Length: 109
Length: 113
Image (cartoon, each protein chain N blue to C red):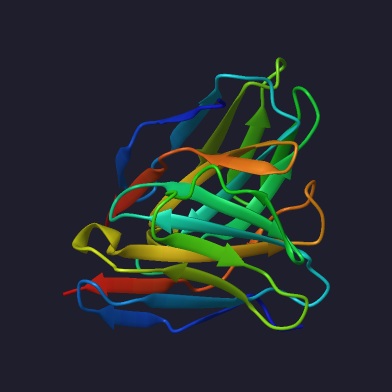
């Protein structure tokens, strides 16, 4: 079955620095979605990427979908304390979302 | 438009009891998914339902677990004869069609004594 791997599992960032989390699928995806979960909260949808090579930006967050539609990345610039949480990618094929294990981000002020 | 509603938020059961978790999807959403999350882990797919039909239950244990989404009323995830290993957060999500993003409820944190 489809597997989605995400690295790194943990990311400790100094406030103001940039970081990137990566997502790789074992199969080609129809689209990929990113979610953020705050501690004790529920996953909140951030964005969906559909086209090969697509790049989308949300303020300080930049999302990319690979040319082969098997990998994706999330890059956050100038990290703030509000960025704390776990970021999940989820590969979508047919009706099913396969979630990566997530990257848990902590921020040092 | 209210979001996905799950209740209860927290549920405590003793070993051997039954746990019943409810999920009301967003208005207009007929696709419902249940996920299980252990501490510091990702979401594991359990079951996908579409009004009165179970489409995919490949992630749900064959024993003790069942799910339904009746024509009227919320979707129910039922765990019979709970064991300590069932302790987890259970999230429900809904979407209007399989190509759209899923919207998650606040989850039910199940604790087994």
